[in-house]
Image (cartoon, rainbow, N blue to C red; front, top):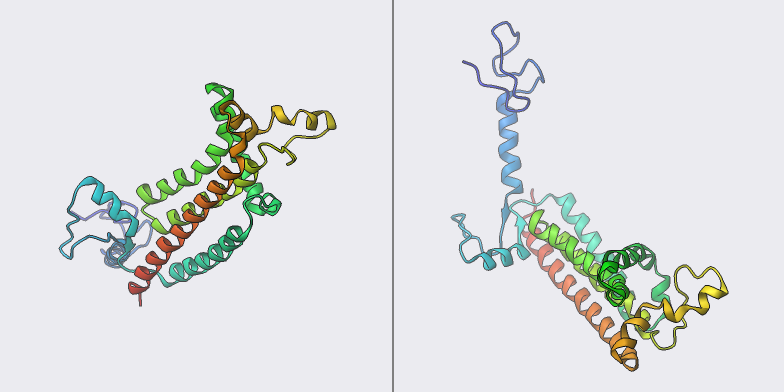
Length: 259
């Protein structure tokens, strides 16, 4: 009895013409297709940082999850590698620009990524609105900073793409830096807010300013500059960590470049 086609599953019939090793439906040659699958499996098999040559990963659940931080394919496609190097250089230079800005710089609010982050910020208000006004005000900045970490966790633990996760960590750092000028404006409330289409709306800014309404009930309005500086420092630390992580992964990938 003939074997089904390894590609489309067609079972060869006695009346089918052609070679016995070729699928009459899709035309694939069985031996070559199986060889291609074997090569693809070998080139994309993930090797964790602590995996032994025998193939055992060992260790506890947490050790196994931690090892995913350093996973790289056994053989790395040069196109993917050099593309990742280009992305690393771009985010390194871009990150330096964010880091050298003062924590209360207006330039941070004029960056391209600020406009990209804004819809997530606004969605955070909607998401946390059922939990009360205070959490609704906090939800914008909170969700804006958490979303890159959630996406990064997806890349790391589900897709097993730690380099993509390192870029998401960079993005989380950028969001912490992006929030800093807003925190620093909690007392002055000089920054224009989204949706201020008239003077009357602008006059009600104290009722709409997130960080004024976050810090005022806690009696922490006087801490706005210190908290803004802390947010900028956390963002800087996350960016530097992402560079170290991404650089380590690229070094491991370079050692496994496919010929």
